[in-house]
Length: 284
Image 1 (spheres, rainbow, N blue to C red):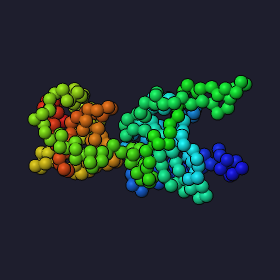
Image 2 (cartoon, rainbow, N blue to C red; image 1 turned 90 degrees about the horizontal axis):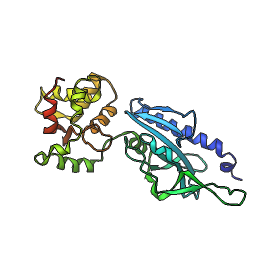
Image 3 (tube, rainbow, N blue to C red; image 1 turned 30 degrees about the vertical axis):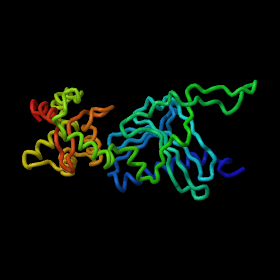
Image 4 (cartoon, rainbow, N blue to C red; image 1 turned 60 degrees about the vertical axis):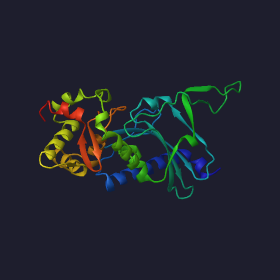
């Protein structure tokens, strides 16, 4: 019997601690010590750790296999889909040194819940009953290895877990669409009513981003994105990454996003005409 089989529980906890340690080290080095990690008191919802950074809460189920393992699938509890930004991280590590080699990710972007698993194969018990029949486990689904997204570094995984930044490609595509405001209609802006609510809550980041934009705009011909983030981080406190996440959530009405307020043209921050008409009704 190999050491990995004989001491599988020991190894499982060791890999978990190493993983959390790597996340915390990255938070220390590059993310302003903004990461918080907790463990569930009761393990009945399919996740091993809860991690929060930049306002994103991740309920993470951890799996681990060494590079020589023949494992081709993992099991997930259906309750994980009820958690905000629930996801699975499958750690592939070196059999001898335990060094992490690769990560496999199953989940959605930061701020979005786990994709539906209702149509996935229902798992069965590993052992049969007295008649030799392996009964189904109705709350457990099977995810094949090919359904996971490969992530080649801890830095990339940290970004995927906690940062809402869109890729450069999607940013360009979004900008080309957004700058054509002549084609916009109020039907595209489903959350404009939130602007009135934000105007009365100066402690909220949505309020503070709009206020920061207006203050910078009053003294310049345009508002630079990096300057806006720096301004808000300095004046209102908070990590820059958290401000960037909040800003990105104010660029769209989709999903759990805060609402379509800002768009970017290169590094210039602009406000949709429809949103500006609402903003100008209130005091900031």
